Image (cartoon, rainbow, N blue to C red; front, top):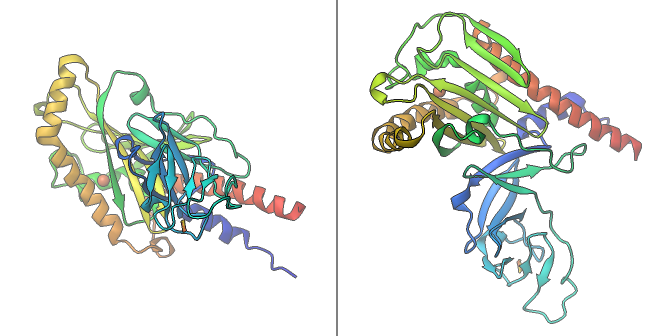
Length: 347
Ligand code: FES
Ligand SMILES: [Fe+2]
């Protein structure tokens, strides 16, 4: 007799490793080349990406069908990937094309590896992780700040040695701005006491401080679509930072494995023409370093927290956003696990 799976534990595990049925950014576009494979880890799975001869990106499991060597250690041959160990060549669909060491080897022509849908948006490479109920990718809905053409900005990425949930909690927690970042160039202002409120939006929620808007990191908003999730927030800029008002951050968080995540932040300002040029210059010359310092403060804090902090934490009123983002993840994980259990039961 097989033991009944503990549904609650499965849901918790799914939240912890990352939801399926999602598009996740894994790399900057410039990092994926046609001359060299790129190894990535997504939801604990090792993947290899490279650019085919036509420039489109391929993504398959990073596992040689022969004996399991990482294909990402290999080389690109005419748009396919060749294993470094004994030379087996696999294409972008995960089909063995050639076994150069062995004439007429039966492995040739076999679909041996999973392949993944990939798309490039605004300098980032997104990979789709299928789920039982969404095997084919739904639309990847990008934020209007990136699609509208009114904003100018930069993509920055960073790998944090913390579960992705900590990065999401951190983004849903505006109150940390005036404490953790109190020594920083742009986040040193505003009161250190407040209440939080939470408002539902069409595709997610908005969490904000009750007592102040525009003095610090005073709100953030999560946008949840069937195939992806992101958040955005504003960092107030002093007048000395030139035209364009606040800096907006659009953030995507990728679960790498249970103890690592990769954050993708677009830093944007509503400027065009000459103002866009001067912001680019100012950003590179002065602001970028300040922003990295702030991001480092987040990284160090989250990496210092134990992996199971939630077992002992004591939330209070300010954690409205934290509670809501966890609820969003848990609900989605529950749907996935229930569908999977129903399929097992039907077999
Ligand atoms: S392990 Fe890749 S060719 Fe042998
Ligand atoms: Fe922060």
